Length: 133
Image (tube, rainbow, N blue to C red):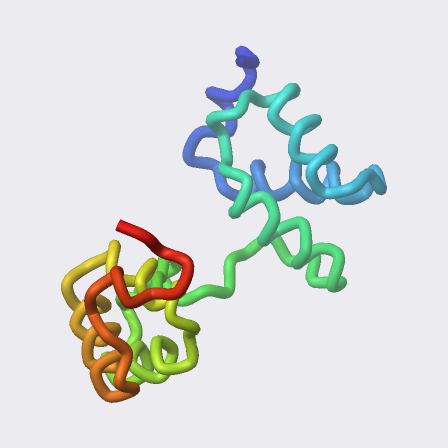
């Protein structure tokens, strides 16, 4: 960890300038991230944020100000989708993928069960081909 990383804590503009510097070096993104972490420490910015800014700079957008809405949620997953969309996704899965989806929340399990029942797929694993109890 670098002693210099205290300077960058809370200074998003300075961090983005460093990411831009790494982008200008012309190395692949992961190598650039590793160089960044070596210089400033691996706790200054996570890879996802580094990647977002790196690709933004590669698109020619070199403004260091963030355009994203402060209220926008960045960490989304399948369960954040409306139930109708989840049902549509599960209906397009094969049998084994549907079984895997049951390991998640009760919400996806109910969708998987409903889809299998509608498709006439037995719920007991002894009926699955190649699976022996």
